[in-house]
Image (cartoon, rainbow, N blue to C red; front, side):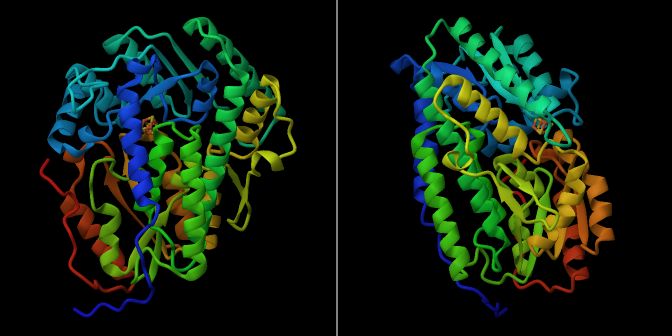
Length: 443
Ligand code: SF4
């Protein structure tokens, strides 16, 4: 079948750097003890830079990642073990695989050497109740770690009370870190880490904003790969900040020069809800129709700092030098953290996410939206049904399927493929090429 290539494409140039950084993070984590670095369980939430004041540290992810995610049989086993402990399919996906991994004595394991790395403390910022419950399980099944969790304010509108609340927690967190670890807290290292984290998040916001260009310069899968450094809590590192700067520049050029993620782009979709964390072709299955998943409210609000305007365009948080806040003392730094995460954070606005999705569908010139309804991730599916109704009312076609972000045995390939095929046909699109199976290996 002759496929019409509408747009030029080219490989992502900073990809090699991303791979190098990812490899280095794993290496640094497992060699932490050799350098006397502290090991901290945490990372996926914002504000890892709070730890920078302590000096050398490495983050151990609170969920099994990397090789464990490639092994679908192992993942299924982890899920089954969680079920035996009373944590069924409707419990947080991260919690279930973390628990399964603990029961198998693999949690924190270096898959290359078999060595199990035990953290010294648990420290993270809380964005979902699932994380909080998981923390209780770490204590019960894994290790009696000293633990501190910063609660990000979940407010509908920016309020001074939320800035004050977050700021007071940050001060308390610094005191807790000093007391618990016995280390001196260096405010210059804190400032350096925070400025890097701030810049990383703004560069990432810019990357995502460029997705409004036609053709989309990158697809959602590439965006998710870029986000892995955020998931590992590495945005405070200067080299990671530099990577995001370079990636933002490259995506800007691609958007300006009309370099496409998909040469045949003729249909643009947001894929809302968690995409499988294990290798899958769900996002790329749409490509056979010339359709490209370019992002989602869920992804963009997780990794960026911005406000969503009524027309769906973004008001991105200024860089540190542009916000007009002093950044000299510890008080200044903690105050600026509180301001950035309350004034430029659409994620906690639970009611607004529905209208945001409708507005963003126009700004990002969407032809439709896809929702993975994942009962293992209530944190991310909340508001999904209301959003589907609002999008349909606004004339945006929507399809949904039952997702299972960390449990491949729950992913019904046949059902999902037939839903996607039917949705595409309803949009008037014929397949341009053969489809691929959604899973690359056996469950
Ligand atoms: S967002 Fe989903 S996977 Fe993450 S902690 Fe919440 S429920 Fe769990």
